[in-house]
Each structure stands twice: as C-alpha cells, then as structure tokens.
Length: 376
Image (cartoon, rainbow, N blue to C red; front, side, top):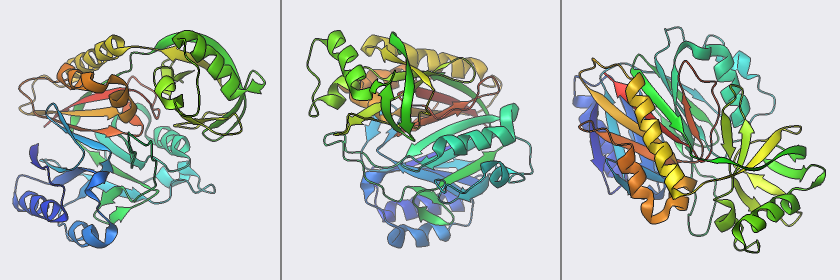
C-alpha cells in the first residue's frame, strides 16, 4: 500500500494526491480518508472524485490518524496494489428497504477484506450491518466505521455529506469496497460490568425511554452518581456518561458497548446506536489503564491473525471519537500501543466502529478500537 498525506485538507490537495495515485501503475484502487473539518462540499470535490479513473472509496471523519498523530484537517490517500469492487448504497435509513434483497448478488467474487463506511447519523445502521452479515457471513473480513461530524467541545452533531466514491460526496448512505486483501483484525474495548442487567422496557431506535419500567435517565443517573460521587446535570451529562457506557450482549456473547451521549428533557437517553426494546443492558465502567491495555490487546490480535509471509503490511486503526475524548492527553499512548513497527499506520476517529473476522459476528460498535493489519 502506498500512502500519501497532506495536512492542509484542501480540495487542491485531494486532487493532487489522487492524480499521483492514478498515475502510479502499481495502484489499482484508492482509499481516501479525510477530515470533515476540511469543509469539503459536493460542488467542490465531486468533479475530482467523478474524474478519478480508478476505483475510489472512503469517507470523512472527525479526525484522521497518520502514524501516531491525529489531525483535525487533512487527507490521506492510500493506493492499493489490488483491485476493489466498489458499491454505493444511498439512504441506508430508508424504512422500506429490505437489506437481504439489497445485498443479494451485489458481489460475485470471493470474499477477502471488505471496507464498510456508513454515515454515522443514518438511521437503520444496525439493519444495514445485519443484512450485510446475513448475505456474506463469515466468508471474509470487514473493517470500517461511521463517518460524520462532531464538535468535541460543544458536542455539536451535524449531518453533513461524508461518504465518498467515484459517484461523488454523499450524505445518509454507505460505500462498500470488496478487495482480495488479506488481513488480521483485532477488536477490544476495555470496559467491564459495573451494574445491571436492566431491561429496556421502552425504546425507539436510538432513544431509551425506560429501564425496568422506570424513566431511563433516573435509573442511569442514580447508578452513575453513586459511582462518581457527583450530581449529574444536563451540563455535565456527557462528562460523566463518557466513563459509564452501556453494555449489550452480542450475538456471539461479546459485550457490545453502546455510548449514551445525551439526555433529553423528557428523561430519555440518546444512544449512539439503536437499542431494541426487550434488550438487557449493563452499565459499564473503565479507566485510562483498562482502555490502553485493550488497545494493546487489539494490536496483538491483529498481528497474530495477519498473514506472516506478506511482503508489505499497513496498520489501519479505527478508534472511537469518544475514546479519544475520554483518554484526553493520554490518547497518544493509545496510538503508540497499536503501533507495529516498521509498518506504516493510518486510520481515523469514528462515530461507530466496524471490525469482524471469520470468528466474529458483525456488529456496529461504540467506544471500541479496531486494529487491522492489511497485507499485500
């Protein structure tokens, strides 16, 4: 994999890097990861993307990772020496869409590693992921995440175009890129049960209205306040909640983390992914050390399962934006913990993570780190 990076994040930088990649005969497909803070819009970048002569796929994220640094502006263009079959899926929140039918026959090649990028604010992400897994199952590996914008200071969550391909820059959809790449994947989070289980007795998509037939916020606030010794208010909700996410038992018995990022005036909890009614959830806890240890574990898993004889490897890191907010000044230690010298390292901070190998059920994750060792 050949990697080019420009920290300016300008449209001209994108155009220049794509030109370099297109002109390189060893490059057969192109991954683009960039910062939503670049301020790109469809009018300015669509001519660049649509004019690309090789398959291109990727997305815009709050931050990108290059080696052990994060950037709020910039673009990374990665040239793959293998082809990619790229498919766009617009408006993945369409309530009438049957994803078993959408994915049926979409790809007619053997599974290798599939890149999956979704608009992090789209509805029905879980249905989309479920349909993808139902059709392609354990036949390959999946890596990717939720794209979009978040202001870490104001928690300003705005819907903006964030999915890119040869079709241009789009909003509300997803892009899939199936490649023959071999990969090793490690997934870990570092959170453990503190209290529960609680039954979700009323919910609507990503809003929990009641737990054990009590207002959801009251139940959650009581547990967290006792744990931290502070009163939870609207102003400090995220500050306290970021260290106490929910845990849901996944299909393969893993604990899937679900991130509460807001409470509304009605006593409801707003979660970073759908939580169906009748689900049982735990309230989790963790600290800097448990998260950093989990990052090292994800790296070890990825390295151990990657092809050992590959001539070239690249580490792709998919890390939750809320982990970075939680770790604060220590986040650099997380990027050091997943580094595998001497291989190059790229990645992004996401609004939900995707990482699954042949041993894992595919889920849309929160507050989790995914490390992929990509071999060419």
